Image 1 (cartoon, protein in one colour):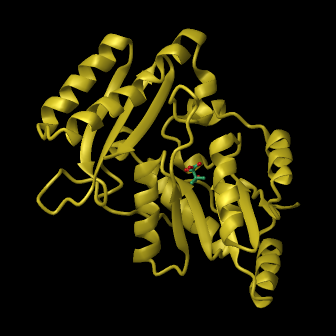
Image 2 (cartoon, protein in one colour):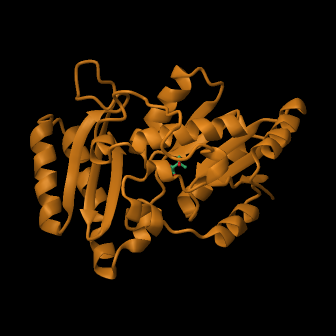
Length: 280
Ligand code: PAF
């Protein structure tokens, strides 16, 4: 696997693949890989001739400076895992090449509306940071396909919208959340859970499963279902931020136009913020 941090060198490489008629798949990451990331990389390899991964801990998407500092950085282990599954190229840019004018005075990308609700309301500025860095990474790599996890459901919708709205010729693929045996969605943040919190954490997914069962049995009192799950999470020791049953295509409230529904939740457990979702 080649490890490249210079944008022009990366472009030379991916241009040569394009000229040779090869399709490039791309998986952007912030490193600290787990089985969920490896599933994305393997999916990219199934659909493309060459696979590029990136590792960049994007300062623009952290709403708390302490979170950015605490974000786990494990480059050696990440590189070893990428090599073991046959990633062709790792793009590992310096902050100064992606943000040459600093973090403040730079062009930003905002997917209006979708960026301000749910996760966006809880973490102001987060999705502008995500949309901006993903646009930059897409411009650097110029992939044919990019693969993202459905664990970050709202992020996936925002990236689909930005690619459509900015007419980028990139197919976006979403992959189902990879879970631990007890149902906890895999996330780099899980390492921060204490032993006791780790025991409780899968209850977040269980609440989503319970709501899903009730919805499938015809219960459509969404506000009551959200409220009951919120109270149950509180009793279990979580500090819930939201439990929301929404239209899976727009994340707006359920309406007659809704074709499929999704249940989304965010809750703090001790110092760790967990998110999860389940399609109905
Ligand atoms: O999902 C992530 O890990 C990040 O939000 C992403 C897409 C790599 C952008 O920094």
